[in-house]
Length: 121
Image 1: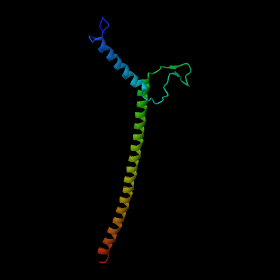
Image 2 (image 1 turned 90 degrees about the vertical axis):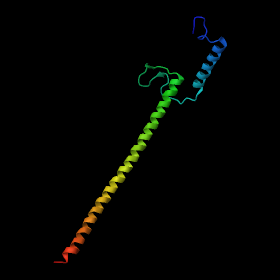
Image 3 (image 1 turned 180 degrees about the horizontal axis):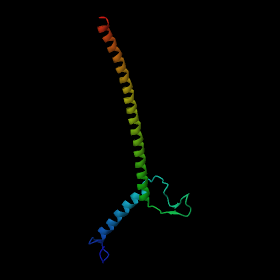
Image 4 (image 1 turned 180 degrees about the vertical axis):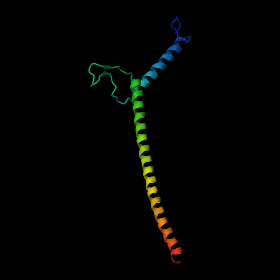
């Protein structure tokens, strides 16, 4: 703002329009549906008398969005862990089956060896 009270050289009508647009944007932020939080102003249950600083509706909105994002990340992590455990279990099962096949292959090779060289005795 300049000394004269105008908005940096804007006409008074343009300045009024600019202020109205800011107010409309502010009202949109305040009118958005806000999920409830545990961070409302007041006293905490464990520390009576300790005031939690009050937050604006935008700050509460952002905290709720971040909480939602953190919850989604935890869910994604749990899903990944579950999937990796399933893959690990499948590989362990394959290892067991391969070892069994190796043992069976050794038995068959021994039988073939005995058939080829055992009859010549």
